[in-house]
Image 1 (cartoon, each protein chain N blue to C red):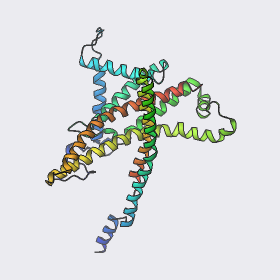
Image 2 (image 1 turned 180 degrees about the vertical axis):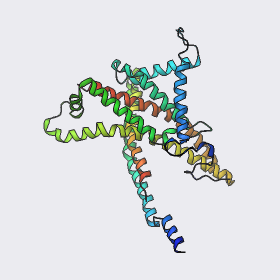
Image 3 (image 1 turned 90 degrees about the vertical axis):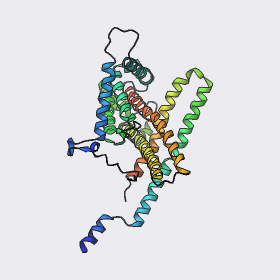
Image 4 (image 1 turned 120 degrees about the vertical axis):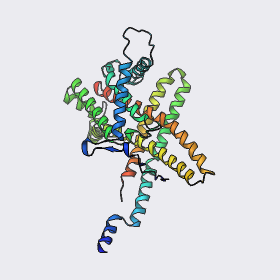
Length: 254
Length: 89
């Protein structure tokens, strides 16, 4: 019996690495492929019936609920009606992150793909480019930078202090914090689940299951339920923050 | 024999006191990083509960804003969590 250390991957060699170097595929890439295909499938299969006013299929209901949710809770609550052109991107972003997070609790997979920071970094950089480009196109580059760095109603003597802080906060901290929030939440959840699962499995293997093992197993079950909430919430938070940043770039505070 | 000694020295590049100090450092980093966001999230949620109690029909908007505030403050604790893992020694 291979007692698992909490940080080691069990030897299931057929899902670890295929190929090597930049074109090598591993478990993370397979999960991202699944997330992409699942997102595309929901909206392709959900939009087949063009003439049904009352949604009747499973996929149609899921697709319409998803779009309605993103439209109301993510865009209209934060950006207002001006942000509706961003509905396709934000819906795709929300569903992609949700599907790549929810694999954390799927029985044969048990790994959230966002626990490796490559894709969160890419998504955060995409959001960064998107909100800066939206602001620069809407307001012109110089006015956008001026409106970002100089908040209204600040006396001129404080500007020498405020401008570097605003620069770091708007252009550096925002994408970095988006990446770290998603990555660290998923990594922490995964480590918690692995720790309690390894503890329970190890105690079971050593046949010392008196007091700690039921508690550990109960906490594993509870944390799995909690991770469902965290998966959904992190996808929602990433989408909402993207919407807030784009909204702030499009119409700055008056 | 010298080669074996060299290999062993390469394998354990950190001495015991360095490993212990690294562990203490990691604990301090995350422990201190968790104080502020703990208090902050408590304040955000308590104000959200007060707002929902005073005006129940705004509960949906308040709840959405509460989750946004929780995500912002929790990110700071997670910075500390990630840095605790990055510290090597």
